[in-house]
Image 1: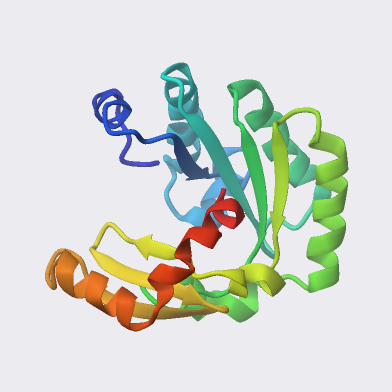
Image 2: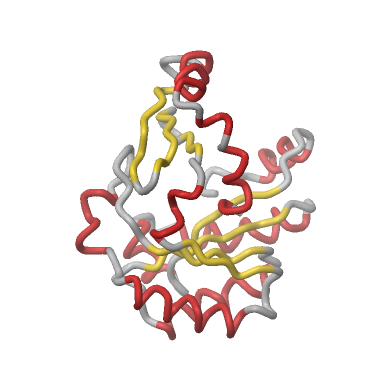
Length: 201
């Protein structure tokens, strides 16, 4: 979401893109910055959502529940920011440390929240905000392994998720798409990756 511009949105509108996924983890720039580490991330996300919606795209916003924001009132503030913006789906994700290409793996012990804490917060928020979004969905550590998620990072690093681990398929920019696709097929992930669509959105 940080790279989206009106010009890019107009381009995507001609390429059969249907929805965008963005992240917001705090109800103001300071709290959001605790996890994202980019001071402008809050403002950029809040500003771009209406521009996405007005072009007819759906928007999913993911909020990762960590030890830094695991407070019901703080998370309510996130919902209150998002609800008037036309967000279609609010996804409440339990933090887990990703291994490949992310800093989260190095901070897993510090940022993780207990399963019971996550469930209680997610249940409260789901009940409270069910009428404010088309869907409020949850994504706990226990269901990360349902189907592999394909992730291409801005650096070109391409991975799939197996359970809570990352499997590197290669670098799209240096290895090329054919090698990455060959590795995807080798792991047979191309047969099941479509099942990830509902979980992801």
